Image 1: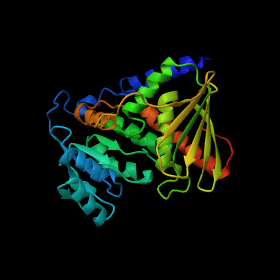
Image 2: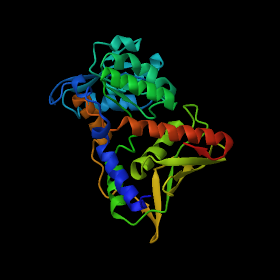
Image 3: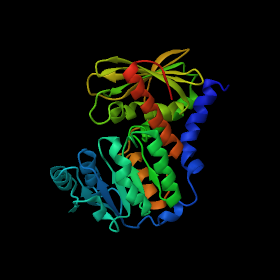
Length: 322
């Protein structure tokens, strides 16, 4: 069995190399590699989230990426679509997502509930259009496996991640963990709700779980929920003995991580200033341009499996194996 220091070091390196380790040869052929000035028209399915208007602002108003624009949006309601279009300066509202087919080079799927994500993206994946699926990727592991197998079959790049996980701050914390003493316990605080109408723990719990897995690896053996109404705590045990605890905040606030070593308890936080445009956006655009997936399919599914186990434990408050 490896030591905790070896485990953490290997986990951090694994995140950095995941795209190379798990990308299939057909992916690069799906997009125009090396043409950074190539214009990319994006279509977004889903407008209930504030994300859609924010993406429009980033690409269309602030023009943070040369040649990349959000051109089309479909909303769950006409009003959602109209508001996102106005706030994000998105020029075209479609009545059906399929109207975007042949008019876009990249797709973003942005529903609040993950159960709608993969069905919406499927026709575009089959058409070879690279897709970013907003967090969480999907609602059930099996549907995720089938979808990603299909994406490989069609040679279409696809990815999904929490913006908190895929950030400069989290990757700096990974680097810190490689340098410090072995960690015995980890505690993360963040807003989430077992009873959210948008998928329960899946909705915001992904921001708690996914950064933890980036920092300490995917090898979680079992989970146990202790509920206090719609809030409470989650214990996750790794196969190597590391114990992690997630505390669901009662008030909205920042995500905070504490860790314990033999030297005491400290807060784990980034040492670097976040860039104006963080890597969750730059990695997404890089995939649209080159076909290089920033995460392995294995890591995407591992997070869904943990969330699904947490959901099950939340019903019984017993240990559930991942």
